[in-house]
Image (cartoon, rainbow, N blue to C red; front, side):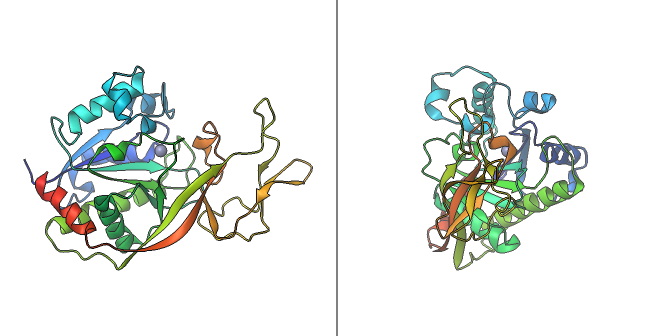
Length: 304
Ligand SMILES: [Zn+2]
């Protein structure tokens, strides 16, 4: 076995079709993506949902990586698939992988970004390397009891590459190319880290998740106001404190006042309608890079 295996996942959500298409093209033409000498395993996260072009069949696969539920054999197609992926490619699986790169797309006007869950040193090292190479913003998701069970958290190191904006179910050459660039960069920096050829930047810029907001709803769950048009498309941007969050049909502004320094992401993301999330709030923070991060990643890459 090679000294490091990397799992590349596409189609964790079956209506995000660009990364699966790229992976299928790569399968057919192995030179399409430079794997930088790493042993790579490619999988379609949720093949049945991809076939149906829907986000999931029974439950969001990217909320099913819950050790307790998996241990007691929770029912449903996605829980089964999560268990299967771990048996096959988990750190102790048949074809074990130390690192998981999970390729997603968004309908929100976020451009391309990285999503990191929590503060594991190896994840922070990898995201700092990719941020250093591509300058992508990082959405650091943590401490939200409403949103748990993400795929990459079940691997020793993992990163989500989020590309957009693109409608669900639509193939786009631009999105495929951005996905390819993000993936190739991840693989290149992993190889360089393995060989001891990298230096982390001095600082990591993160947008730390603070919480989410839903549209104002009636008691029947119907929206009484929509995301304010002046907020639409303002992902990653500083918002003036007097900006309203929502606007009703009669033009009146609704919702709480904007807290200065809070930056929206996933504004009006189509996939989050069912999760009652109109947008999430983050705070931009600059973290000094800790000396423990890179060795944590390198140890995984050597031990795998
Ligand atoms: Zn997704």
